[in-house]
Amino acid sequence: MAQGKRIGVVGAGASGLAASIAAARAGARVTLFERGEEPGRKLLLTGNGRCNLGNRDLKPEYYHSSDPQKLAACLARYGLGETLAFFEELGLLLRERDGYLYPACGQAQAVREVLLARARALGVEVKTSAKVNRIRRGGPGEILLGWGREPEAAFDKVILSCGGQAAPRTGSDGTGYYLARQLGHSVTSVYPALVQLRCRESFLKQIAGVRAQAAAELWAGSTFVCREAGEVQFTDYGVSGIPIFQLSGQAARLLEKGPVRVRMDFLPWMDPRRDGDFWERRLERLGSAPAEDFFAGTLHKKLLLLLGELAGLDRWWKKPAAEVPGEAMGRMFGLFRGLELTVTDTNSFDQAQVCRGGVDMREVDGNLESLLAPGVYFAGELLDVDGRCGGYNLQWAWTSGLLTGTEAAK
Image 1 (spheres, rainbow, N blue to C red):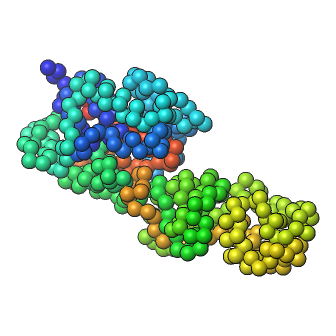
Image 2 (image 1 turned 120 degrees about the horizontal axis):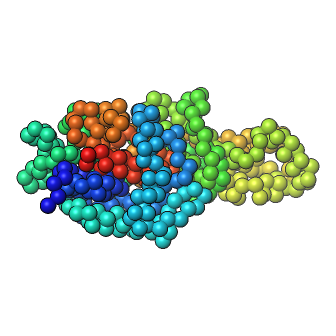
Image 3 (image 1 turned 90 degrees about the vertical axis):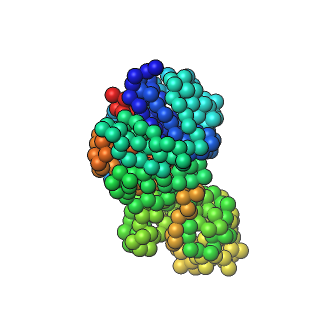
């Protein structure tokens, strides 16, 4: 029997599987605990089932954390190159699309299968339906884990990788925060991130299902916060789409402090300083056409009708565009650049892809080992690290999993 360290890994998601493999291949005896009936369930949901597992454009500034310097150092040690080598070792064929990395077969299931196959080949003991809810010091150098009515098990090192609160149906129900607090750790405020925004305006029902290329600006009161561009989707309760997801973590945090708005710019590819020339030339060409035809082809018809109604232009739709009062046309042009929505909330953790916040990164060292409970490591979403859409959160899972598994086994 191998004489390596006894390592318990709590949580068999992406980071837990990576940590188990890294520790086992370094000679450790690894037990992997999964509260559900099967490991890696959340992996199956990533990338709409295609599993966007990384991105060639990897930069620390694409993440949020209470300790960005420590985060950057982790990414420098276990970054894209290490991720590619890891999956090559596992035998997973990858393909790239605009820098986004996917399994070549297009199935998230394949990622889970190769991870589990490698873990089992290395002798990792996988315990399912085992929800760890107790962690404490045992004898000298021992850490005890308890689950259900089973006797507590002793380990030399423990890696907590049991996720945050996003998508709780996959097992991320916040138990990791409870375990961290048992060790004396603090948990920063946790919010849903990469999630839809809910808005006050009832007119959104008129454009539910409409998609539009836009830049979405987040405003806290009168202060501009950030801007994201891409395809936005309107729903009957608010807005969705990748640009909205990118803003959502910030919006959730800011909502606790005061009013939050999203301003939509439907011409983000055009220089706003040339708007006057653009509309003037269009009037020269199409001024004799009815106003509804003058605007046709610029935006989705349902969206145009709504903007026209908000601008007070709807009663002029059948009139020649050149005869529409300048004030009404000005309001319409302004809405192309600034349809404002009042954000009231985000959707819940049930719909969120990740959490913002978690175990404070300032309470772990550069190897992600606890400064309060030596021998305990943290990996994945349990820490207060979250990234943009585009494979960044799974990259953090591989980074933190490989790092903690390797260091714990030393």
